[in-house]
Length: 208
Length: 222
Image (tube, rainbow over all chains, first blue to last red; front, side):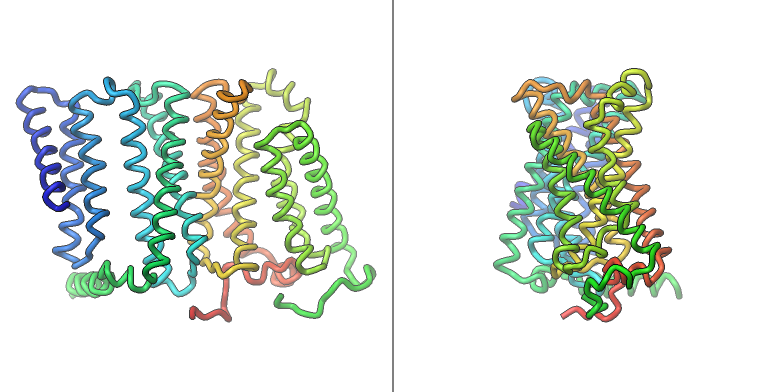
């Protein structure tokens, strides 16, 4: 999985280089941004010792890869449903990251307790809300900058449908996952404790 | 819960202003009840689900405490039922045709109603389940809930348009408009409710069973 991640990152670099060489700049900013985002887990691990699950890392890179490389190859216009596939990928990604954050909050924030069923419910709501905000952003972009991100009512509604689906899947998988492991053990595997120490150490060093 | 022993006494033991408040709430809920029956009979699936969900949240504290004075504050009951009333009223239809911003107004009323339901959900989840939230999380939940339900609602309207050939959605622009008002209304009401519960007198909070809300002092994680 790690090898596949690296290969996909290399492909994004290729989009960057290819875009610059052929003077086809549309996807260059997206490629640069995606490279930074896909490098984030590595930075987190090196500087904070925060370890995201391998599957999650892979998912992050895959979603960015499909967006950038697919976009560069013109799949958004040529492959029917490409837009919806990338939507579902990013929605499930948001849901998974939301899951990690909420589970961590459940463990560390004293005044919060979120049982498993509620956690799943919340993940679905959270993903859908982010999906709605995304559509609103596309809509605003179309209105203000004159782009054509939303093709039609069907397009934006099916986007939302896929967002909902992605959220539901992650909520189900997450709830199932927590039946096999406890919240404590999951958060431990992320090494949030050491990350917390790291952060307070960095803050202390800044202050001195 | 909490107050204990303050069951439904004779009506005369309640101060008159409290009775008026509760009556306002009951009247609003009766309006909500008959509106819900109306949309159920019309097999208006989305609104029927909305009405039934709202009624369940309204009735739950009353039934579980066996105290009609545990009714939801009247201002919240009105906020909840308003969009349903607007939906079934012929007057609102007429306004929609003559006034350009009427649609925005009903969308905003819908957002307020959803946010109120989300808020109620945070209250009742803390009353009846293991769920505990602090204020920032509850505000966040209200905003997310409003946006998400509004999104699911749009999907529902869309599916109904495609499958049953109804005509709910005029265009992409109008659907996005509704969602935009949900964002505005949700964020607004999230903060309004945070302020509302802070401003509410302790006596009223106790009377309504809102005591457990957000400020859980005597609760330890275990």
